[in-house]
Image (cartoon, rainbow, N blue to C red; front, side):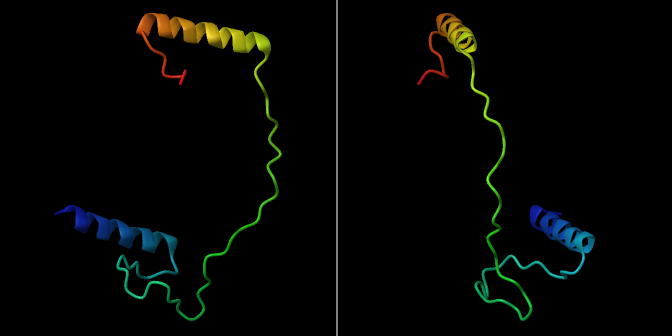
Amino acid sequence: HGALLDAQILADVYLMMTGGQTTMAFSMEGEGQQQAGEMGIQRVMRAASKLRVVYASDEELMNHESRLDLVQKKGGSCLWRA
């Protein structure tokens, strides 16, 4: 069998595993139309990220530049220096 049959089988298995939904249409027919009771796409608002930003120290930056110098010397060019 071919790739299209594989895709259909995988879609059927996915729908059986997730439950509720019984078909998965891949056509563009009726795009933009919603069935009764369906919700449209809604934007989810999230609080700003509270990740801490850690910057490289002067020593780390110097070591990084030294490594890039070595890469450039051995390879003739350095991808990380644009």
